[in-house]
Image 1: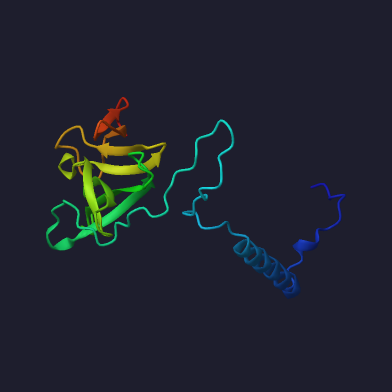
Image 2: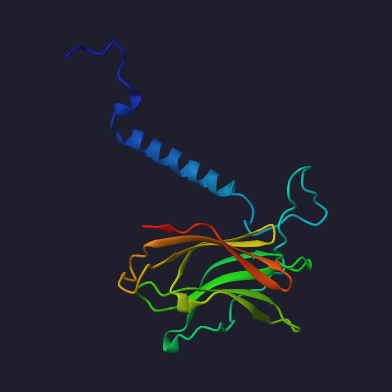
Length: 195
């Protein structure tokens, strides 16, 4: 073995003072990182903030309906309902944001199918379901859900037949919905088999 021409490195010394200094440096780094966190990710730009030329204006999400406490048209019996993914944005161009939610039965195990619903504020303050985009009877699970430029997009995972176990969906579909002519118009990208 050839001896090193470099001096021994200081951190190879395993004295207690070395480890104490290392622990203090790690603690200081974590503390500074905690103080430098970005703002609230759900915060939106104010109406006075203009988007740079050539870019779309930011989605308006302040005041979007909260799905907490909403009873969705999903039969779950005694296990109750669970809101999974959600996205917000102005879908119909009225300047008021809607909330799109994926909801499933809180089964506790397995992969219960999702229903995807659009919420808006009713005539009162309580939010209400105004559209069903994905019926839970289709046995689909929502992998991703987003609203951008008044378009709802979702990645859904499903099954090619009833013989496919519910743990292991074998089909994937990219679907979008756009409000047009008083209804949501659905578009599907070519489905992928063998997820």
